[in-house]
Image 1 (cartoon, rainbow, N blue to C red):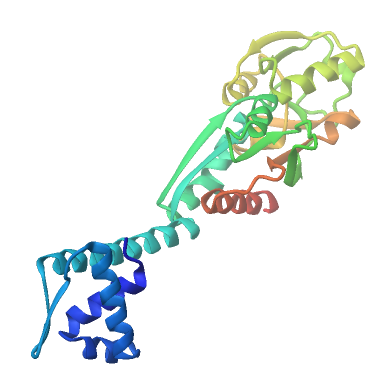
Image 2: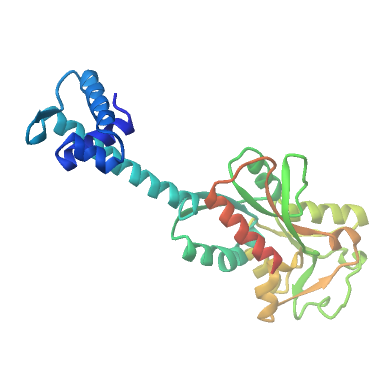
Length: 297
């Protein structure tokens, strides 16, 4: 009913106690204040101020309008603060899809410092196989995805990538642990630990054994790469894994990762993805930047 300019004139009259005082405060002619006040009174249908020789005194309706003006001013200020928080990524939500082999490093290298710097941002983490995470990205169910060797189409943008050549993970006392390079034929009849179908690593494993005609036995299957690494450390099975999955086990001396003589496995990479054309929220953009820094390191 009353625009911000008119409300400003009314508040100025109430604050100074006169039309002339309001005009001086606002830097306008008294006639401008008079016209604005008269127009406001026509719109609300009653007097807002009683004018007299001693100045202008607000009526009950005037006091209600003044209260409304202050509430609008407070709401504008609150909105400005909230918008500033959102646009600076101080608050908000972000959903990220993370392949299971990346969870440990993501938690320590990205999530922990990000939560410290953005304590009021909610981070939702979804894990799954590469094909599942890419599909979720295309459906806008996640903002950002970290996946191993995804198939990238025109609807997906690769923000960053880093080589993750898949090697053979085995226990330090396994018979193959002393090898400097594993040839495909050496894996014939080996007991293997694998991920379920739908995971990028399982597709790499299956493609490798088909390409080289290697007959292996699936002895352990789990959607937890941590469980697979633990199984490998027992010396009972071996697995085709990327470096990121076995970093901790290699550092503790429980497992070794040996290069495999296969050009395709050597070209495997980890990828940081978003959907092409999607405008990320400030919170999602901040997490994407943090992930990109992790990849660059």
